[in-house]
Structure formats: C-alpha cells, structure tokens
Image (cartoon, rainbow, N blue to C red; front, side, top):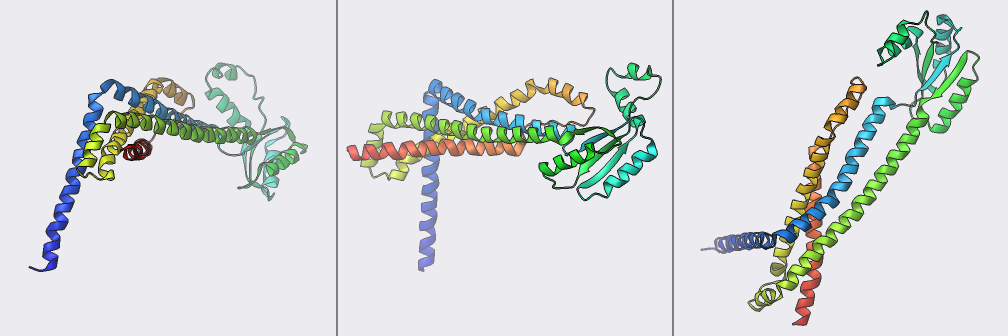
Length: 318
C-alpha cells in the first residue's frame, strides 16, 4: 500500500471528525438557547428592534426617492408666456431657445393642453367647463443641458425672466435640489443609525455570551482538562451568537413586513391619486437576505469578542 492510499483515510477521518465537532457545537448552542427561553426571547427582541429601525428608514427613503421621481425628476423650468402671445410667437421663441447651448430641450404646451390637464384633476372639471373661454397662456418646458449645475440653471432662469414675452418663470428644479439634499441627509442619518444600532446589537450579544461563559466556567475547565483546544471551547458560543443574529434578523424582517402591510392601504390611495405615475414598493427580497446575513455576522462578532476575552481570563485564572 503506497503513501497516498494511507493519507486518504486519514484525511477522510479528520474531515468526519471536524463535521462531528461542528454538528455537536451547533446542537449544543441551540440547546443552551432553549434552556433559557425568556432571556433568549428578550435578547432576540431587542436585537430585532435594533435591526428593524434602520431597515424601516431605508424603506422610507427609497419611497421618498420614488415619489420625487414621480413628481418630476428633472430640473425642468416652466416658462409661462403672456396671454397675448400667439401660437406662432410661442413656437418661434421655443425654436430660438433650442439653439442655446445651455438648453437641452424645449417643449411647447398649448392652452388647450393645460386646460385638459386641469379638467382631469379631481374637483376642477365643473369649474373648467363653466369658463367662457380659455384663460391659460402658452407654457414652455425648458430642460437645461444634461449635467448642468444649479448655478448654471439659475443663470438660465434669470435670462428667461428677462425675455419680453415671458410673464412668469417657475424653477421646478429648485425644490428638487432641496429634496435631494434632504434625501442625502436622510441616507447619512440612516447609515449612522444603522452603525450605532449595529454596535448596540454586538454589545447585547457580547454581554449575553459573557454571562453564559461565566455560568459554565466549570464545564469549560473540564473541557480544557481533557485536552479540548481553545477553538473547540469557543465554537459553541460563536454558534450561539450566530443563532441570536439569525433569529433577530428574522424578527427585523417580520417587523418591516408587518409595517408594509399596515401601510398598504394608505399607500394604495396615494398611488391612485397620482394616476399611475407613482410606483411605491417595499424592501426588495435581496435586501432582506442581506439583512439576515448582516444580523448573523453581528451576532457572530459579538460572540467572538466576548468569548475571546472571557475565555482568555478563565485560562489565566487557572
């Protein structure tokens, strides 16, 4: 029998032993959680709430961005012409504006189109039909050149206001810039909140594992006396932290799904009011899967920090 045939059974036996050790640690960690149901439930609930808050903020920000896109995602400038400007003059002005390098596109909206939009709005139909004639002017929707900065758009707005045919210029991009700034601020706050609550979850798991290690100090001493390695002694607590994280992640996901279900009816009413232009949604399934993975990682990290520190103390005290 050659050396390679002798090494293969050894490798297989080591792999089988490794699998058995991990299976035992997995079952032992789960048994420890079941033995103290109230403490386990409280820890999982606190951690689940900590993870659900940033996830709920993420859902809110995502839908605010969708709302902004439905209302108007561009920096379009609405140019209201004077009521005495005829169709030919409006089209000529639009052609002149299209030749400018700082303008990407110009769309002419006739008074008839504006009146039809007002009539389609809820509550305006009867009032519009009662008008003897159309009081609306021509409106030019001016799209600044792609990539234009806010300072350039402001300069364009001033130039448009100076035109003799123009009665009013409405800068639609100004509120959009403010909304983008608010969304960016909200995103930063969400990240900071997630970091703080994630650190709190790690500390909660670490403290729970520390108490578990102290209550099982004699069992750990016996394991070391019979030759158990430090990694073997630490492994059940790492699995315990991972179990905590997985359960807390499931709680966080369920809380967010319940939140979506509670808000489903008012969201449907809001979507209906925008006549199909608004599409709000919930948290994507891949985001929920990432949340579960992060929760498991946080639980493992808290258990690793606590077990490494307190097992070393127990070893030094012997």
